[in-house]
Length: 414
Image 1 (tube, rainbow, N blue to C red):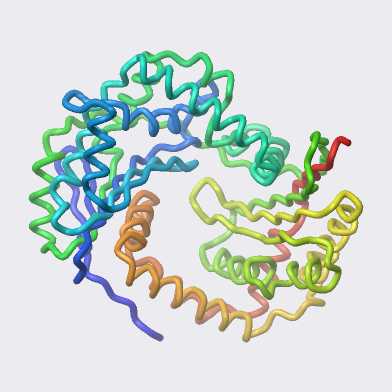
Image 2 (tube, rainbow, N blue to C red; image 1 turned 90 degrees about the vertical axis):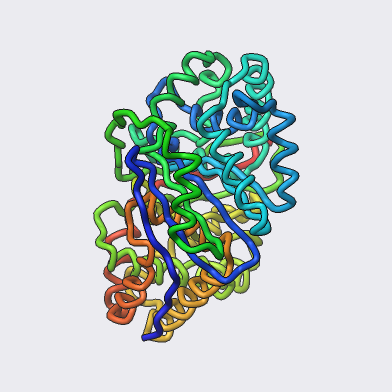
């Protein structure tokens, strides 16, 4: 088996702040800082606070205005980004290596020293409410939100990462600050750095910015994981050109080897341009332009979706075709053989090689591995496990997962 190596070390400061240093022969530095808090950690009256805080950390610190922050990020002449997921909140800068110190300094400032100005909260409240309106107009986004909302009764996945509009409209500065002070602490934070520096140099630089950050007791609620409900619901929406179908499956009880078999199945089912669903709905019947499946093996997620758009005249035929494809896979009437497995191995190896060659991608991969408390080079074990997966394992994964879906159909109200 091919071996994939990169040079990394992990450290934990006395305050619990975790560091992943990756040494790479590059002219760039990539710095990504992740807080181990996302939408799954929000209480019922906190839905949307992670995303709101992500926005607010660019709106002013003890020493910078929002204009200063924007300009200092722009001056790095690289790329910078922030995003919120169900499980984490991430801030990143990738720039020339000479920008290493100012990049890490500004990230430390916005994470530790944000002041949440009241006037900026009101401005950002309006921005996020506009995001809600945009999400309603995005039929694909709307369809995924609907299938989650009907598929779960208690799981936090039933809510969009944007949260609940009623909460965003009324949340106070004190409530935002309370959430921030609870979770945005060093012992709930990971920084991943790709640079040409020696690991000890990275450690000393990080210490200079984060070692005096005061840790505190971390209190997290247990995250509810819930199998999706086997239910089909049809909704109607005005003035849409495309109707949609979304299938939702969950797989919380699978082993990692079984998840790998499911990933092979997902690639064959709807991830590739030569997938079962693509050929059945687009190439053979010509009734759908947009058809795919996607899988998420992140902790607390464990979801597989099938998405399809079609005209109102074809939507029921599309559903029938998807159902037939699923039945034929579970019934072993569609061939999944060693060729499919070997192709998936090649896909994974190509993805790993791409990550290792890309400073930003490697930095992001290492960050999320650490946030999920997985081995930084966990892909090596996955590749070894893939060598032992057979076609029968893929069929068994299909039988375990591809039953009792949540199905949401969206059609034009007319």
